[in-house]
Image (cartoon, rainbow, N blue to C red; front, side, top):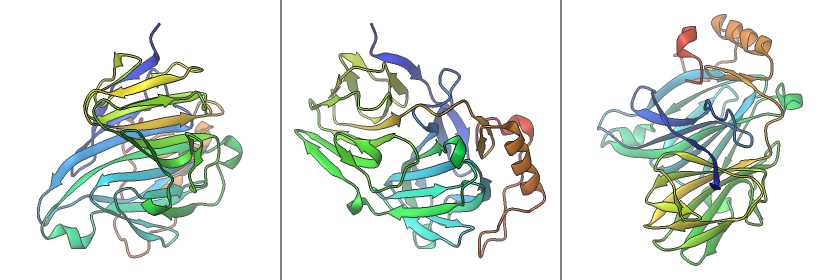
Amino acid sequence: MSTFKHLLKPHTRDIGAFAVRRVLPSALAQTVGPFIFFDHFGPVELPPQAGMDVRPHPHIGLATVSYLFEGEIEHRDSLGSVQTIRPGDVNWMTAGEGIVHSERTPAALRADGSRLHGVQTWVVLPKDLEGIAPAFAHHPAATLPQLTFPGVCVSVIAGTAFGARSPVEVFSPTLYAALNLDAGASLMIPPEHEERGLYLIEGEAEIEGEPLTLHHLAVLTPGSTVTLRARTGARLMLVGGAPADGRRFIEWNFVASARELIEAAKARWEADAFPHVPGETERIPLPRKEQAADGS
């Protein structure tokens, strides 16, 4: 019997300055734990005088979680937050009833060019919290639990993992950790969360002798302890948690438990009724329906 319940392959999405690999949502699994969206971008070289410029755009019904391995991104939102995220930090933005934000390469990095590599995920909010007030929190890398085992380093990004708890506030049982393994090292993955997935960022690794596929999300069969072993130096993301409380509608940057909430958010954006990001004058227009099926 395979240790994998599903193996989710990436689909490439162009976001302007570069392409991203998207493994969630998938036809096989809309969510893994509360995670409904998983984008892996880079590593990419941003040339001098250029950079990433994701213009202001809205969200509802979710929290965005940004995590970098290389580079920097400046986050600005309609609450007035201005925050540069650096490798190992966590930016957690709760959209709730509605928020607008932009993501750009900081001005200081544009002159000489820079590298960018990271992951952005979306976490669904429980149905009874979909309409909460928006919020933003930044957690520097030094504030996150850092666990060490022989040949293994684990950073607990959000929720709980291996007996440690991240300071990041979550809204349902959540598993989110960055794993770095030396060649030949192994790590036991316990069944402390009902749903678990491993995404291989780089290197070669296997679960119970079954190879992981680079840039694919291996959703593990629930209920058993499994052994992750690195064939070479490897970097992975471990995601999961309790299952989402029901299926979600997702269109463009909106996630909701009811289609009516999506349509209302689209109308608000079309009418320029969302709050603005201070200092920003641009905005991404609402895309055509065929462009908006699974996020920007």
